[in-house]
Length: 349
Image (cartoon, rainbow, N blue to C red; front, top):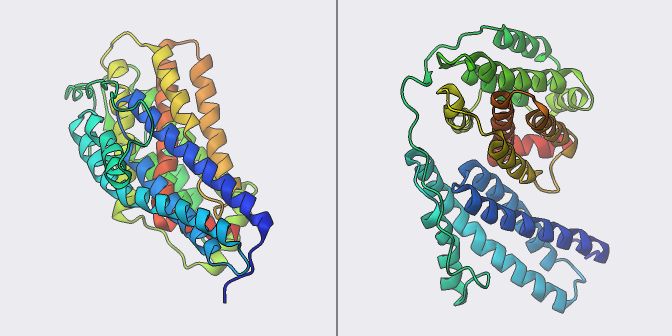
């Protein structure tokens, strides 16, 4: 039997829908401005949308819900289902566009055309003449940076982070820290002859290593991961799709620093503005996820953005701006993967 309907829960559900709606609008507008769509962001939105739609759907069948309220909520569920069916297609096209560096005009039109087909009208007035997007960035010259198979642990960050995870693995669930360890590893697989290469590698790798330390040794992460180890089997390896998201995020980070690596004059104002826009779209996940750990990730992003705004060297500003974008993208990658969403939900429970 379904649970009795609680009117005070309705406000929470409607606030969640309003948040989701504003997130989707921000996603569309920022993608239009940036000229590209982040497929990991699409996938994390899909995961959150599914949970939200299910939550609303369950409410429509609750005992004692007024019929008028149930009808309205049913319409909301229908619209969420329509968007939910489109997002996987959007993710596939976005991944192809990310590889080939193509514009997103065709991708953005997917949502618009599908909505017009379903409803007989465009979702927003005045969007028929879409502003042309910038062309995709040209591939980086081979001599600017390259990826190798074996990482070079120049600062000892890989070994230090691995030893910390091994030390705490007997009493903590370490899959979440392992995700960030693999970020450190992948960053160290890039090589460049640029005088800025060391900073470009060390800055984000050090941040990722510090995230691991925070998760395992500081509250609330340490206690939450200890509790999780008692109710979830040990997991110490990433799935291929999880590792692929890290590789794509790190690859995009280095592509964003092509100019600095190639000796071009930095344009920190543009990069910092891009980083601010990406940070504004930080994904907090649905109501079922543990927000205290996500808040720590958000704080790291905010601190890195602050470094981008305050650094005195223009090239270093660009590096911190791209590092901010990398951290935000990795957060989207985490929430796009079911295992990590399950962990964050299980920790909260």
